[in-house]
Length: 203
Ligand code: SF4
Ligand code: FES
Image (cartoon, rainbow, N blue to C red; front, side, top):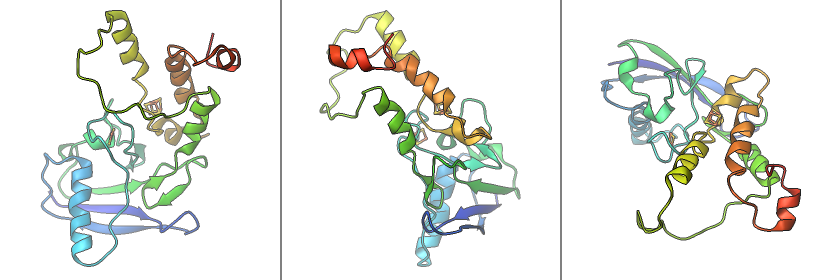
């Protein structure tokens, strides 16, 4: 497939930014959207140009890091599909594709397609929860987990914290995320009685 890409380039939060047009040639329909961008970036870096900055981590649809608005829709509009799990077979040969970052005031652009999603961290912190290093993953089955707790954990993990709901909402509302976190964190006991008494997610 040969595609025309109109990609938002912005050097930093203060830069006005603009769409830049790129040609993506010989794209395999089996590539993921991010793999297609990887190939475009290889072409740019081989010419000495700055690669297009975009976020990704797991590339398995579970971490919530990828954050592209594709043809005007966050994650590209395939049902229950993040941008990293979107495959090029969903596009047509010769198609023109527009790629932008999340457009929401609480998520300022850091560079190109990367936005700052610390606003979500503040929501989590308001419940008294923080990130803490707990070491490596334990071996599978080392800690027996009841079926009920396993099901509850899966439900709690349904929101991957990507921010697409904020990007999709004309008011940039985070209420889908907040409601998912209220449901999630009420299953995670605060660490002390004092924290429990002040935790907005408890009870
Ligand atoms: S609720 Fe929002 S942040 Fe959570 S997975 Fe859905 S779109 Fe992403
Ligand atoms: S990179 Fe993890 S969900 Fe897309």
